[in-house]
Length: 451
Image (cartoon, rainbow, N blue to C red; front, side, top):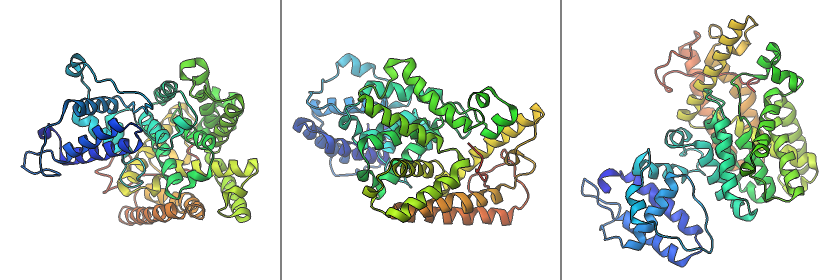
């Protein structure tokens, strides 16, 4: 087995097993997991080295546990089973197990998910290559926050809901299931880094994470401005008001209503359901970039009144502004990622906007300013977004979340310097398709109307 797995794979597997061991309430399971960890740490590699020293024989019980967890990771269904014995799989099922990624790929997916609370090491693009990123990240984050057990949520219905939502995300360059998963993970890190999650109720945390999951579901890859200018049906339905955002919120709850097996909130009381639904809708609507300045002003006003003592943020509007601000910052957090991630997102959003410009030209309507391939000076546009949108948002949030803010502002400064270098070296307008690598060219936009 060692010949098929790198040290990195084995190391990440060990991290995952330790994580599960810490959550287990079964002594037998803990013992088996501990033995598995020891076995992996002593595995011999082709170069004769090992993470540990020996390669001891693995007993049948521990082997069954390894294979069972392995199967769970490859299926992306890490279920907490309390008070039950694990049933060892049959010899027939063990011999017939197959996964499109192979065993090594399954472990790599599990290892990447084990980094889910890391802002800099977690790579959503790697997760997307190995599986369904939104389902994987959403379930992992709910597990990390222990919301499934605390709120007695139906695991099967949650999983089916996330599958349905992921299937409804379209194959856009930017507004797709990868972006949704990225926002879920970003929100989770923001909440955890300064322990903000302990200042929210479980229902609030559930509403925030679910809002992140669905906030762009079925996004058509065009802006609200496009809907309004082309007089689309969805613009008519929502009276030109937060067209995409209203559509996303409606689609999310229709997915629950149309199939009872997708009703992720089925276990909640009527009052709790109404609270979560109302909170989710408010947060999704607040992701409309036209509301950016208003939202920051509301948050700043409440922070001036109550400072970091979130217990004082008691009014419905204050709590709502707080939740909306956190999701909004997660939604526009790409510039605060390491350059290798931030630049990829910049390429993606520019590809999507240029495609919209092409549609506008074919339809005979005026091309939106940010969508003109022959006009947009990308590094300058990206720098503008950093200076006037991303940086002020993170600076404001950092008053409440200083640890996250310090880290995020560092990356914003580094990335801004890189965009400014690109602007200086290549002042002519680049094209989205003309790229060598993320480190050689940049692309992005001022996303004040990207909704």
